[in-house]
Image 1 (cartoon, rainbow, N blue to C red):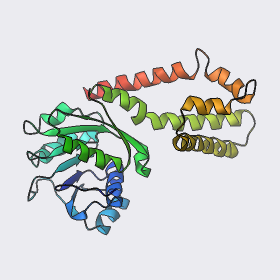
Image 2: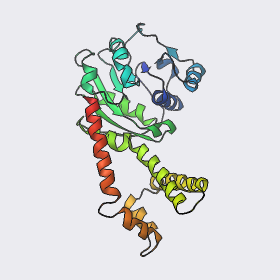
Image 3: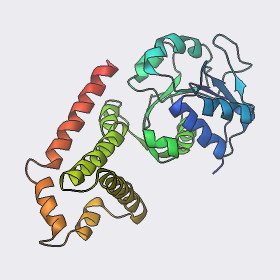
Image 4: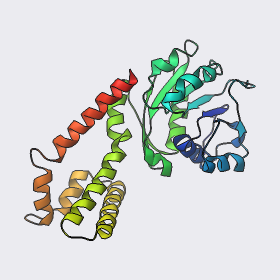
Length: 274
């Protein structure tokens, strides 16, 4: 589906996440004449992308001919205080500010913006880099249905999109999907180490673990079945899988451990958001 905007798009921050989004928009046919990029030092692959499509660039403080339809804020949280006040001067009455910056609340944006400015806070995750991410969003009361649809369309270029009405739930979503890829990568590490512990060559154990984790994830995606059904399909009564699951599904097994981990991540997200 081709992305269509009713004005300019200013992308502030063309690092890993900003660059992934930019690539997704261009792949979906976004009009390059509508795109303006602001980043003092994007990585080489994104410099190449900007040059290939001859995208307009903005220096901090430079005026624009008209307020953009959307300002996408993809800078690192630690430089937000230096970057955002300048960006805020560009917002017009029909501009929506779409943030993909972790730990920054809607209120932290609103204090720099004209009263009534539309703001959407979103939390993507790293699989967005290959178009397989998932992003959770929350809009303030000034976001119109058309602006919400536009943000949905832009974020869909790098994966699935979900919405919450209560901004406090962003912390919970961060703990599940934002941090979640790290949990899966750790699972692959642990599975490889367990294979080595029972006698496998370390390189073979790593190959088996990585292929199993990625293949199982793809099966989950393509089958459309519930994880519990897929688990049951692999498990023969009294078999090897059942023996392993008796440990993982014990009262002190994987579920309570993962629940504690997600609770810790959500608590830290709340602390970082102030």
